Amino acid sequence: MEIQIGIQNIARELTFEVDQTADEIAAAVTEAISSNGVFTVNDTKGRRAIVPVSTLAYVSTGEDEPRRVGFGHQ
Image 1 (tube, rainbow, N blue to C red):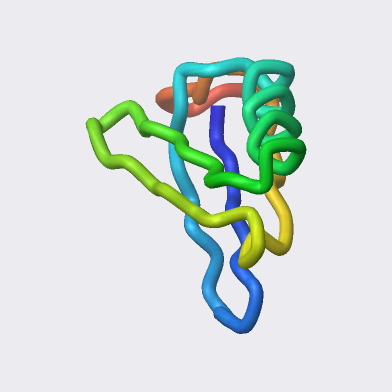
Image 2 (cartoon, rainbow, N blue to C red):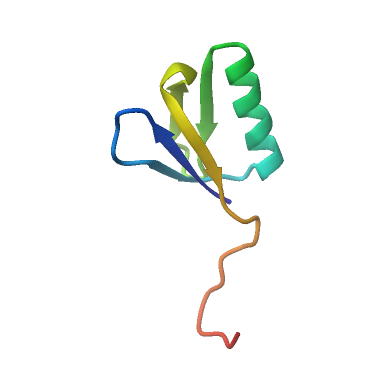
């Protein structure tokens, strides 16, 4: 699933492809906010983002559907 992380005062968002579900991401964000800590996420390529919740603007999750390859009719 793709997630976008917005950071305050930064024009560009971070985009990650992750293995977690939308519910797991929401739980991680909620936990980070409640503890006034950091939101940490690992993507499918092994990269890690660590964002202090004091600078977090938003976290947007995409759909859980896998990407399609090739030409398909819709």
